[in-house]
Amino acid sequence: MKEEIIIAGFGGQGVLSMGKILAYSGIMQDQEVTWMPSYGPEMRGGTANVTVVLSDKRISSPIVSAYDTAIILNQQSLDKFEPLIKAGGLLIYDPNGITRHPVRKEINIYSIAAVEEAAQLGNAKAYNMIVLGAFLKLKPIVKMENVIRGLKKSIPERHHHLIPLNEQAIELGKKAVKAMHEV
Image (cartoon, rainbow, N blue to C red; front, side, top):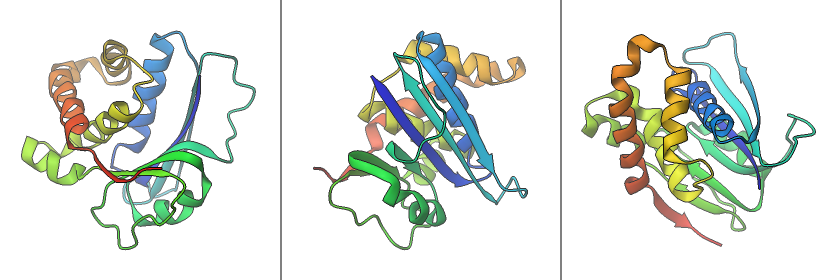
């Protein structure tokens, strides 16, 4: 098993955190992992993305030119990364703020209205965990217990009381993801 993932959106949407939690979850599951963040100087409001590779075999390079999965949270990222998804791959996107929806026919496309779901949950900061839940529903490559261990590893101990809320957000994302196009 080898999964090459790009997560992309605006800084402040929890893109890098989502990637870090996924990477830690893979480590907790004894997988080989790379985590390579990229962000503009603006941090909040600028574009950010992270490449995560999870594998049961040694990873020869963290550089990825085509992705198995793209998790896209803004229009600029959709424009940039939709063409880089492998045929038969997976695109998950939040339609909030998207003006041109995905058009490729040889990939699986799912949407997650994470902004609305986070509002219903009453916590905007749960946004990225809702998106992560959508991904884990479609590609359960790490076990939930390892995701919780990854959360504990990646967030400061003073915020560990929020782990149940994060777990609830992940479950909400699993239920709220919708198929737009399947191959």
